[in-house]
Length: 286
Image (tube, rainbow, N blue to C red; front, side):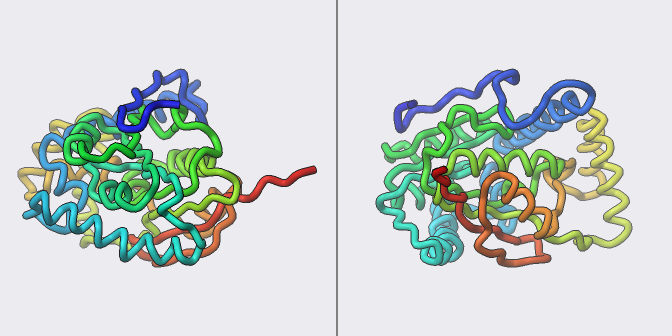
């Protein structure tokens, strides 16, 4: 076990769990994960608050963390009540804690919090903002695997506005497997995903975005960012590590069941703010 309040270092590529990293497919996955880490480090350096919560451009530290408190109250508490989970005596993990927007609220309410992040820059900011909390364990990961966290060791796992940025459904499925792995049998989960394939821009915007995403995919991110600026697009909001993939609820249900979870329900279906919640299947004694 790693001590609460200390950062757990990321493990080298060969120690990751949950995905094969051999052959051409493995190389593509490694490149995708490396792009995720680099892109989110860059976003953190530019404006961590904006890229975590992009619906507002004038965040202050006070308003940023107040929004996290409000979202925990609005989104998480009703599900905890449905699943009959008492946070004050429970341990939890937050996948993709960012700069700690919701982590601070969780640390006030849960017995212990494991804050998981792929971006060193994001984690560094979160540790600074939450320096007064001794019940937070910081885990830095190199990919989707959570090898530093013991299997069946936590009561609840949560993720918001993270999986929507993943560049492939394969990586999302791997993250779901890992989230369910670290939850104890009978423990609870709640995670957000993009459940809508409906276009959010006109055909011209879709063509431009698709072209810029393609440039990023083949390693031409800097030229793509220059073109984005010329087109009046935020250069940090291009590429598959921002736009990600959308999933149907039946796809998500299959991922959860294959990982040993039992979905209790979905909310926000067919929208960009879809949620899946439930419990990990209890162990059966033969």
